[in-house]
Structure formats: C-alpha cells, structure tokens
Length: 527
Image (tube, rainbow, N blue to C red; front, side, top):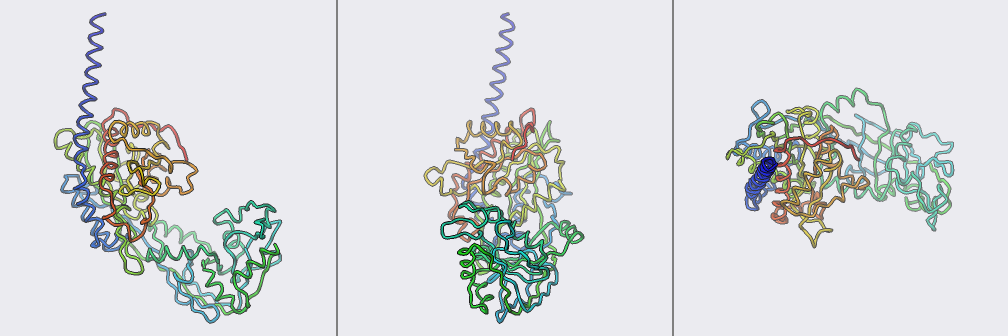
C-alpha cells in the first residue's frame, strides 16, 4: 500500500511539475508580445504609404509585401509552393451610369441615387412613371389592386407602412407594425415579382446609404471570380432598383404639384392607396463591366512536432476601405491593423519558442486575409481551396479590431468581446476561459455572442468561413467606436497596452490548443 501511495505521489508531482513548466514557458514567451514592437508594426501597417489598404489597390500590395517580409524574418515557412502568397482570384462589377435623366433633371449616381443590382447595358426609356404608394399588397391594404406595372417605371415609398396620427397601422389595425415594415426586403422583392423595368425606391435612409458609398469611394461589387461566372450562366432578368432620397423624389414629382411628403401624408391620413400616373420623360442608360482584381492572402507556416499534421489557424484581415471620394485616407489602424499586428506579435512569440526547442506540438498557420471588407472574400477562398486540409484544422482564432475601447467600456478598458467560442465546441470555450483566468484576467464580454445579437457580429468576420465548415472558432473584438470605417481610425488613438494584452490572450489560448493531447471536440452547432 505504501509503495502504491509513493507511485501515485510521484506521478502527481510529475504532472504538476509538467504543468508548472508549461505555464512558466508560455508566460515567458507571452512577454515577447510588447507595446513597443506592436507600435512599430502598426505605424507602418496603418501609414499613409499603404493608402488605406483597399483590396485590389496599390496600397494593399505594399502591405502584403511588408507582412510577408516579417514572416520571412521570423523564419516562418512559405507554404504556397515556396511562396507566402495565396492568389485569390477576384473580380469587380464596376457600375457605370451614362445617363440617368428624369424630366429635365440629370441625376448623379452616388449623390441622388444608388443602384445595387443593375443588369448589363440597361437602356430604359418611357414617357411616364407610376407612383405606387408604399408598394404593399395585403388583404387590409393594397397599393397594387387592379394595377399592372409589368414593364413600367415605378416610384414607391420604401419605408414603414401607412400609419395614422395615432400610430395605428392600416394593415394591422394596431400600433404594431406588420412584416411589410419590419422585413428588410419583403416589399422590394414583392414589387420585383410584378415585373417592372425600373423601381425608384424612396426613403430618408437612402442619404445614409449614399454617405457610406461616398466614404467607401466605390460603387462596384467585388466577388470571388468563379461566383460571378456562375451567376452569369444562371442569371434571370430582374427589375433594376434605384434607391433615391426624398429630395430626388421631389424633383421627379415636380410636375404633379405634390411632394413626396404630401403623397405620403395623404395615404397615412386616409389609410387608402393613392396610385398616380406621372407624366415625365425617363431616359436612363447604365450597366456593369466585370474587371479582374489582383488579390492574395499572406501565409506563414510554423511546423509542429509530434502532432504536426494537425493545424491551428490564426487570422486577421489586412485590407481596409482605402481612400474616400474626397481623397482622404482611411488608415484602418484598429480595423484591422491592430489584428494584423497581433498576428505578427503572436508569430514572433511562437517562432522564438521553437528556436529555443519549445516549439508547438501542432502546426500553426498565421494568415492575414484579403477582401474582408468586400464580403469576407479572402477567408472564403481559403476555405474553398485550403492550403492545409480543413479536416486537420483544429480551430481558428480570428483577430479583428483589438486596439480601441468602445463607449460601453469607457470606464473599464480591461475587456475584450469574445464571439463564437462556444458555438461549436464546449472544449474550446473552456480552454479560452481558462487561458484568461490563468493569465490575462480580462473581462470577457459575450454580448455579441448572443444568437439574437441584432448586429449579427458572429457572421461578419473571417472566422465564420471556418465555423461554417465545422471548425471551432474564437473571434476577438473590441467593439465598434466612433471612428469605425472613418478617417479617424488612426494609430494615435490606439491603446497599445490593451492591444498587447488582448494579443497575449490569443497567444495563451493558442499555446494550449497546439500543445494539448486532444484537439477540441466539436459537440454543438449553435446559432
């Protein structure tokens, strides 16, 4: 009995000693992630020289070269046939308006209207348009009763629903709004199904949309090239939708002697449709041209030891939104220069560990992806054409904005939002929380992990392209602030203490993932 007790004690002490050694090692290498080196990287990544790093532009190519150069300095392997770059074939539907004349008014794309679904080489001419009120067809209220709008130009109110002065809806008969008002696309899809050739959808919210377009400086839609080819072969003719402001609507309705607000008020006060034929010349010619876009992900690989065939992927997107229409550079220091900086710092810590003979058991792919701002395109392409098998990918840790403090945490900056950690794997969630408890002691805010999150943050960064393939993920995020997607997102506003601490949390979580005996189990599939 005494001998057995001695053996158990020996094994217990050995286990504790091993755990202590691992904890000491990871803390040692985490300290290599520093504010000074993070600042050095970010001052370059978010500099004016890189011109806001817009996908397909010269500035992002400079950023790609810088990141690849840093991977090479660290001694990471170039895993794409001896290169650090994975080409991502993209194409952009460049939208061009030759003419958009209604009545005596030449309207300007991006100022008076915005079109998002134009067919190629559309030329629309007519001598009238039809005002169809709210464009709603319901048993209690029908703007389109006995009206054929096939092949016509129509103008509709693309917001709310007819509601009287007491807030009572003509559709529900109560103050509660119907799905015509609450569903984002129901009204437009309904009208498209009626076969008009041009829909002019007026809403005060269009001004906000136009402001975003002006800031972005582009009206084209970028996609993975093979998706555009697929769409072209399966394309069906559909109505073009032009989103216009109330001011533009008033110009169009001028011949009626009524303003947009007059017509809306008339419907609201009576609760009855008010369809009108408007005699006005319509002459529009516009379309899209498909242009190839050069883009690429930047990859650096660190080979593991006994579990080297399994892989952890650590990501951040290195693109941003470029130069706005006024020539001002959106530097994107937080979005996502901070994440790229985090990836470089974490890579430095792991490569030093390997140089010292303490390399990870599993392999690690450090990847900065392109085209996130265009629709998660770089990570989407990698998930379709992975350099390493997705079946052997144990997890993805994605870093997108970790350098700022959002308004809700103004008085407690020691936080980070975590998204997705429990969506697919209870093990990964436990690993993440334990790494924080033992090391960084950040407040972990799961606000955006809520399945009812109205912002749908879980679906809006590159981790999602791994998650939808059954790979457990954690998304690290500092929340939206006043400089999000604006020229104010600059290096001088970065909190390098918090950037470093959040990056260290990613490192500690990664250290556990790549050195534990078993990969995280996939045991759920939460929204």
